[in-house]
Image 1 (cartoon, helix red, strand yellow):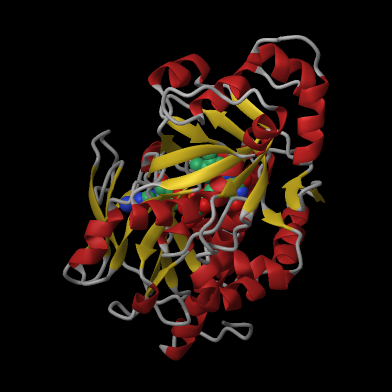
Image 2: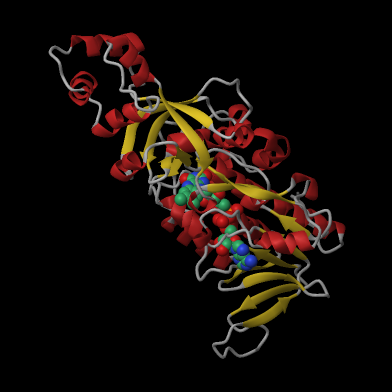
Length: 434
Ligand SMILES: Cc1cc2nc3c(=O)[nH]c(=O)nc-3n(C[C@H](O)[C@H](O)[C@H](O)COP(=O)(O)OP(=O)(O)OC[C@H]3O[C@@H](n4cnc5c(N)ncnc54)[C@H](O)[C@@H]3O)c2cc1C
């Protein structure tokens, strides 16, 4: 008899585990509460699907900050090059963008997910959508609510059902963007079973700022392109491999600021706010020019121009940037007219972040099943035979492909853990495990 494995969650971590376990000869069923699989992966595809990063591995692993020590074996076991080869094998070759980020040539997730699904079907993986995992029954069977529950014939009514399993692998995701399926409700089920879960916090998120309502109302949705963001002063606090100065883009929101450059600093901003109540960011509106050069350009503009005209003529700054300079001034004061003082402000507009934006809007979530709750095989110490993978574990990383890479890698590693454990239980021999 082939060992029966139930995987809960059809995101990248769960599906990666399903593939490895089915290839090893297990009978794999995947329960997914949503009507379709891989919704978050598809959403990531809207931004081009940044699968992983091409930087040297020694630098790559630093991006996981404090979680590096326990994630590294999994990341070595299924490394960025393995992920690229895997995508290639599904007919989705990748390229390296100018920032070192890796994307499939198609720049979207749907062809990859379609090919992946076909491969899983061919391996005999049962993908059971609209199946919501609800815990375990007294006999240790997996409990779910599904289209027909345990009733043999479907009558259109959802019902409760149970499923026996030789091992269970949970890949339930984090708690950001709950409409994509992962909403963190599973924490109650695990905490009931005595498993420690670190509270979820927004990661790769926007921030609420001290900007005036007029500024936010007028410029919400306006991008700030070609800027650099810096954390103000305070020595490095060891965020998840983040750089202290980031070039990129941000977008003004109704409540503050979001976008790629903000996300890159978000872990440290969030921690500083937690510690000090607020955190200060500096925006460099002309990162390609030294302060002297900015001052020189400002000084060369003749005549008594308005501030907006001066900044537009000298530096091609758009209205949002000019309004930002005004927001950056202490209450009631106008930006300086002196070229050197104005140049300094253009190179470092202060912004006070007062809170992270909501978890619902964040790209990912920090928090989840604590490291101490799992062993090196990703098995729950309190629940032998139950394994955990993906974003539901307590790690975080910046955007750049690090999130998906760790989800694939932990899915793969936890599947290896399942095989190792089955072998230990005398339920088969798996030569390549873990
Ligand atoms: C807008 C956006 C863009 C992103 N872009 C990128 C990117 O370019 N690169 C990158 O590296 N990362 C990106 N990410 C992050 C990445 O998508 C996630 O880190 C990754 O999908 C997490 O994978 P996972 O398998 O752990 O969880 P998920 O993909 O969230 O999958 C978990 C699954 O479990 C299911 N589930 C939850 N509870 C139950 C239950 N009780 N019963 C049954 N099923 C359940 C959910 O419905 C869900 O399908 C992006 C995220 C967002 C929101």
